[in-house]
Image (cartoon, rainbow, N blue to C red; front, side, top):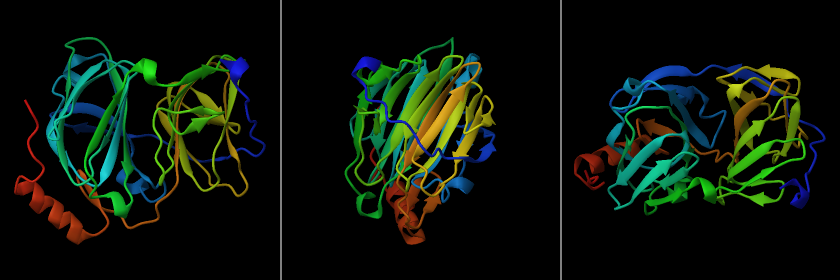
Length: 293
């Protein structure tokens, strides 16, 4: 709670570089999603490769799910705002991602996984963020962990703002996950009407936010519902200031860029085309294992 926090004010907030709408795409076996962070933004938002938002109360939009598919060279971070999704992978991991929970998977040298709905009606809403791995870690052993909602650290400010700290740090509250190289910050920030919130950010981090409830303002610029704001890498800026005249909810994401080459072919993200060819060959030869039914 706020009486245990020492809130650090932001003295020079970052400006908004641009506000973008996502692309409506079909993925998996026919799931309708909004691809917010697209491949064209990977260099600008390094180390982040993709952000998908699934939000629907129509079962036909999500029931087909995401049958077994491979990954290499990246991490996937799945955050379930509402709903139930079952994870299984070829490394022997299985878990239920339920409302408020987070699933963090390091694909590393290669893994197949499936993500299938465990509901036949109601709202399914969540995000999947792809986080790049540094070249030295791309062939590491696959790793996986589920975090239930109650395992995600959270606090409420005197202004009534509720913050869930998925990764990184927020005003001394340590998130559920930490990563030494990319140093990601991932927050879910729920702002009541008339409130504001300052979040310090390292100057070298690339950062963006996505408004998924209502409309917010960042340094005076409007970010409408279902829009992403890329935050400018303003010299000497020490963070971001978010206000919500009528209330709003956003995810805020920031990370330290790797500044390494990016070679991508679908779910494989490496540093060279030769490594991509090897990934495809390894997958075809069955070296990623099989996902349990």
